Image (cartoon, rainbow, N blue to C red):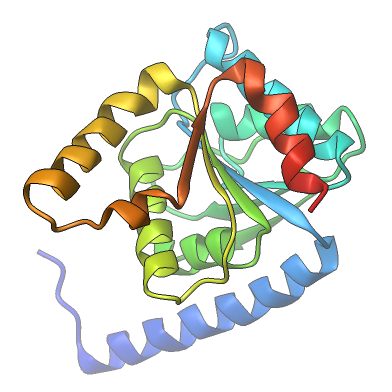
Amino acid sequence: MIKHTGLSILFNSIRVTAERLAGHFFLKSIGPHISVMGSARICENDPLYAVGLQVGALIAKNNYAVLTGGGPGLMQAANEGAYGINQKSFGISIKIPTEQKTNSFLRRNLLCTSFCSRKFLLLQYCDAIIFLPGGYGTLDELFEALTLAKTFHMHSKPFILVNKQFWQPMIDYLHTIADQYQTISENEMDLISIIDEQDLEHELAKLCSK
């Protein structure tokens, strides 16, 4: 059981504030960017890795930088795709005992010690967020982004979910909740676009032309 004293809570609050401030200047320095979220567990021989490469490359070709959590899997794939085009590839990684090392396709990386700082920086400053298939972390990022958007704690931006086979069952479930229980509004579902890989180029070109 983790015990927190008043002093440790104060210290953590100061640390989080300092990390967000450092992140502000870091992200302002990289310019317009799109955040890409996805599983850290996807291997390079998985077909989804190729999708991540495609996402990163298309973002870079449209003159945006790619920002990820800096880790392996689909984060690495998106970074690698961008790095091969123009090196506009950046990460915001986390320092925890179980976290794998940062991937090698980052022009620069900012290391955070708290998840709340990392997530805030990944979600708040970007011009759009692309969600590739993932686990608890990716789902957490998606639902936090949706909550922030619907409560007007985040400026308006596209949320693009890539791979209908993965995402559609969850979206259908959310529509069921909205219909049967009204704990979610149908208009809140309009915040999400869900596409397949073959639609990526068109969707990103449309997004980046705005």
